[in-house]
Image (cartoon, rainbow, N blue to C red; front, side, top):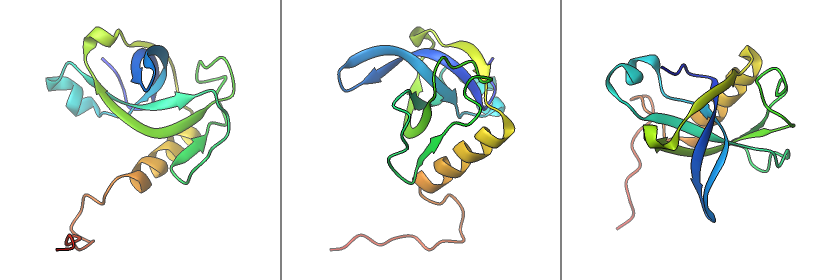
Length: 120
């Protein structure tokens, strides 16, 4: 079972094929009660945040990462066949930063923002 904020080593699909890399678990505990897959966000060792939905991890070493890292809002839902293994967990301040980036990257999911009407 995975918890939100866990760091996992996972076979992550990318532009150049599948690569074993770290990712942060974004799916909730409730999600995991009925689903075998896991929703993750990419973690990269290219330790420069390049956009407003990237977050430079401060406590990367305590999270079980081997080098300075950045969370990138590149999301995937991956099956158990990707062999996720928990290697650590984000600190509260890093988890807060990651959650803010996820919120900024995704469309609002509440009714407080009017829907966008596509142009004809």
